[in-house]
Length: 164
Length: 269
Image (cartoon, rainbow over all chains, first blue to last red; front, top):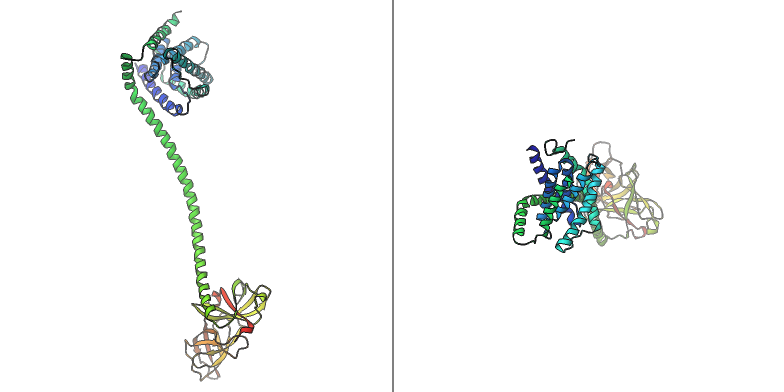
């Protein structure tokens, strides 16, 4: 129960930070995805049975404000979670470099995939440009260690979390 | 294979959402949930605005600090200019007095400024005009005090561009003078730091404090009628004395001489 409340508070924190950062960087065409960084961090701590729904909801949260496509971010976030859980045994997410590289790759891939889904399902183009995507991924990677540290320090033990 | 079951469920769910048309119930559902999360979005926006406001405030503070520094420098400069302006005003006042003298006096000569004053010999000054301006040795030098001219000294050395003036308080200075009241003549001599005095005034002469003293026509150096000063004290202490001792307060204080008028030798009357 304690972890559930902590998880909810972390989710609230993620939404606040995501919108604050997005407000600053979207003005200059840079696509920073803090919510995905949080979702990735959740996957490194939570068991898949809790991780998937949380990540799905994180994506769905962004979809509530998306005017082109509903469910696109949820789909992208779920694919990212699937990749993470598949590779979880091979990666050490306590390493800062691993955290940063993972976030960089997944944020860039998610931006591309999301644009592709919007094009496929909504016949619309929503592309930040290669510069915006890469710089956004880089900024997200820079913030990743802090996000991972916050999530890993907050969510410890209990039935929801993986055994360490 | 079981590990992909869960993501497959969520992927299917998201695909179902994506194929839904964004209209009717879906739009309402989205709107309601967006409305639920709106406070968070607003808080995030306000936080961002506040933070950007803080950076603006810091920038303004830094600008103000820099501006303050510049204004302080400007104030220092203004103070300096004000003091310079005051000096110029004082000079202007003196020069205006001199212009009045130029218009009224009956002598010809040149105006000069005190260029140098001996630090150890305050009884002589060097002026910025010399032989090329018509100044010669033994030329009379006058200066102004409150719009009236007074004897300042005599030229003792001349170079091409400068001249040295012996001021009247010097012990080597002397001039034939007369007293305004009884027209008695005497010899004015400098006495260094002590007051000027007139010698050879007969004992029976009627002399009072406040009597004015002028240069005499019997002087071979100074033109007649230049105001020298005012009698400040008359002494008759010793019984065997044959003359009065008359102390004179100079019309022009030697220490305040800044601009002078040097009377040309040939125009002396």
